[in-house]
Image 1 (cartoon, rainbow, N blue to C red):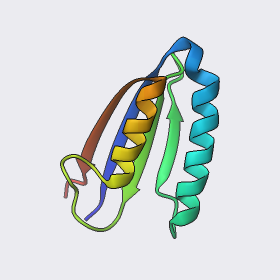
Image 2 (cartoon, rainbow, N blue to C red; image 1 turned 60 degrees about the vertical axis):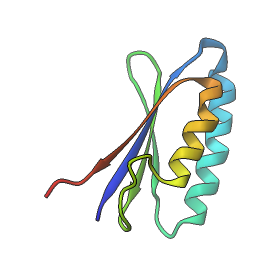
Image 3 (cartoon, rainbow, N blue to C red; image 1 turned 180 degrees about the vertical axis):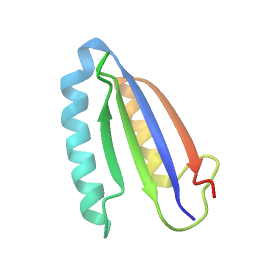
Image 4 (cartoon, helix red, strand yellow; image 1 turned 90 degrees about the horizontal axis):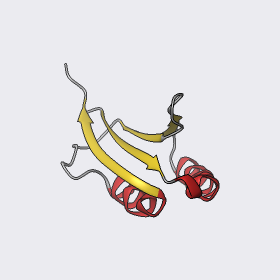
Length: 91
């Protein structure tokens, strides 16, 4: 089953530089550990908020998300408001 998680971050004004540094380290480590790229980072053109997308091609989607998604959402709360959601591919 294909499924994905999104973690949206409304960044606090004084947190952007620290967040970008932290995200670069986290994303590099997580993508290196996987056999394929599962994590993609997006930035909102209008306000600069960010969204992380985790793509999974196996297993069953958990309502609360994967351990990786829960971990990221927890860490990123330090930098602003976060929203974590799980999506499944519709046939």
